[in-house]
Figure 1 (cartoon, one colour):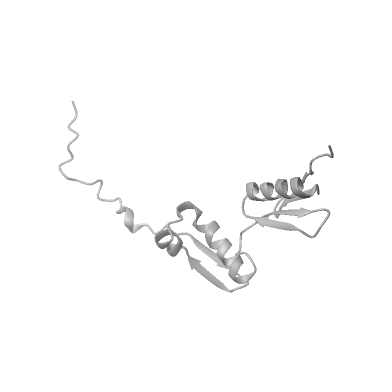
Figure 2 (cartoon, rainbow, N blue to C red):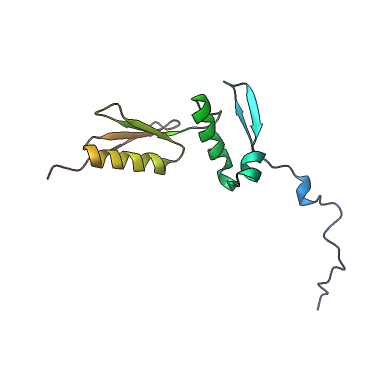
Amino acid sequence: MPDHDNGGDTGPADVPPVDAVDDTPTVTCTRCDREWNLAYELDDLGVGNQAVEQFALDHKRHTGHFPDGVATWRAACRNCPEGSEHLAERGARRWAETHARHTRHSVAIDHADAEETTVVDGPADE
């Protein structure tokens, strides 16, 4: 039977400690000519794997545009000037379905990187 007691050894000597790896995500914005590391979102806000999304939303709120590499889902009403922009398809679809249900308007959903458009229609007249 093998001895599982490693005598206090924490691992092979050639493997760096986990804290030696800096895998903090960074975000750039060419319009602002800046780059940010997301340590604040990870450490202080505690948003975990939503750090990039949270930063992108905050950046849009404060600057009026998204940072580089952020492609959004857009829902645009085909009958009125209402619309909404989201980082996830689910948010755009929910907005489109709610708007269509309340107004009986058709809403187009598309993604910045896709060629296809989905249309959500309002309920049929009863």
